[in-house]
Amino acid sequence: MEDIILFCKSYHQDAKRFRRLAESVRKHNRDAIPLYVCYPEEDAEHFAATVAEFGCTALHDEDILKLTRAASTKTDFEPLAPNILQQVTKSEVWRLGVCHNFVMIDSDSYFIRDFTRADFLFEGTTPYTIMNEGRHQRDWAARAGKEKFLRQYDELREKAKAIFGRQGPNFDFAPTPLIHSCKVWEAMYETYAKPRGISFYEQIVDFPCETQWYGEFLLTHPVIPIIPREPLFKVWGFKEQFDEAQQLGETEAVLAQNYLGIVEQSNWNYDLDRVRRPRRSWKTGFLKR
Image (tube, rainbow, N blue to C red; front, side, top):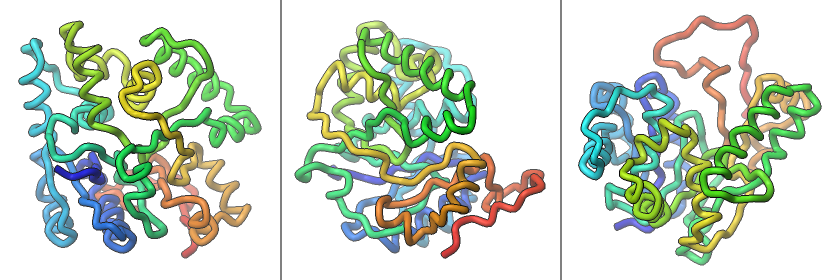
């Protein structure tokens, strides 16, 4: 069993983005951490060439959902929207029995400098917990007058705290990539879901935010030591925020001094879509290399 893997949940629309991620992993992965990619069986042809070329381990959504069903008393699993399905899949990686910890990374991410196990594991065994108060987004949103974002940000985290009866500050256990312990997810199932006769399928459907499930459970059930880290990748929550960053000179060379990589939001950058979406009037013109 691996001590840690890179795990990417993807689908055909993001096949080109995943290829870019795989290329960056091959270039910067100093410790040869295994890269796993998970996608629906019907999307296999879109990933076959990348999986073969970069030596990735391929999994199917169906492989993981079978394990979810086998551990659940629920007999009827309704089809899930893609954003919910990916959260259920990520929360059930521990059932595969292939690793002790996994780096949850999305297709729209890529590394910009070398990385090792030490970037993800404290003293080689304990996964760092991405944990912050969201100021990397909240500061900008306040300046830009994004009142709806700020309100929804607090509402989501207040609900997550209420699940476990926690008081105190609102913490954000994002953005990706995140380092999750399989031991934590297993403990959540055994102590929270199983006694209630539910699965992570039902948990995520009821409260669709797997990052807050993990973080809030860990805060109230310290299965592993909590060693906090700020976000590992640079992410811009809004297109206007990205534009501002470009004007300030945030090139890859600059960002690499503080971040391992970049999350390029696919909802406002369509250059790597396999199936082209209608373009907006502005040009993405991503970071200069």
